[in-house]
Image 1 (cartoon, rainbow, N blue to C red):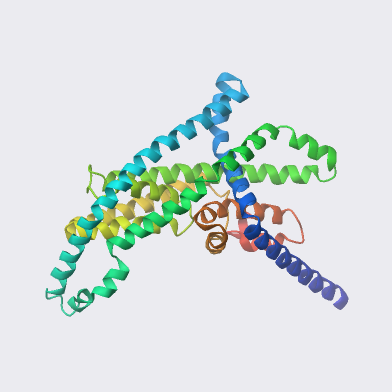
Image 2 (image 1 turned 45 degrees about the vertical axis):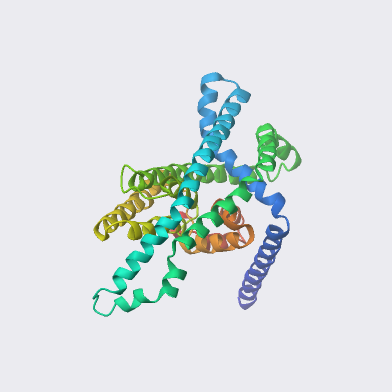
Length: 353
């Protein structure tokens, strides 16, 4: 009995050591093969994104090339026109930065000279406010994110090449794998099927919720609502950053909130913040869980670590595409008896296993 117990402990230690070694190798690969692995990961996510509309169009035209061509062309045209409008709005926001800075200094001076029961001392320290919420820092933050995303989009040619080959081989790779590994085909098919279902649910729900939340936020801060400078720019940032689990929506909301307290009256700014928080709660707590269901099943703590890790090695793009990668990793680990405990630790609840 003791020998069996010792064998079980040794087996678990071996599994833990093997998992740690594989994780180290994967981490080094993510760093040194970034130029290959990142475009490939983006192409796979785009494949899952375009697959639902492609299937809808294919049911109408019954021509695979026409359906894929229509979706990809529509995607490229949309990105083109959004980029033009985004550049125009970004230029307007940069032109407005001096006016925002002037309003910022006026309000800071006003509060520093008011009787706020001792809190006015906080507003008298210009260095703290300059480092914390200065409009120039907001401009730097926005340009840094757009610069990272610009580099991310700079790999689109490589991404499109990978996407093309994924589309061309989507119906033949399964046949080749079955012929090469007949004993492992059923297990691999199950992993691919569950991964496809989970990633499709994640991508579709995330795109839908990010677009919905960004649209509502854009309306709130646009000339229709509170008329903040850079309203379309912050709407696009909300859409993109919301793909980053847990922290993305918060980062997207901070700049317009700061500008609101600078440019608007206090009550109007508070009302706008309440509307933005309500918008986040509706989409984050109700709409997205109902769309994705329980198919994602990753612990929020694991998602947070994933965001930190992938943002470290791949920047903003890594923070966006890290969640789907860890979903696939959990499904693969769950298919092996030895690594199933690791998958269970990654899951949101034990019942999902």
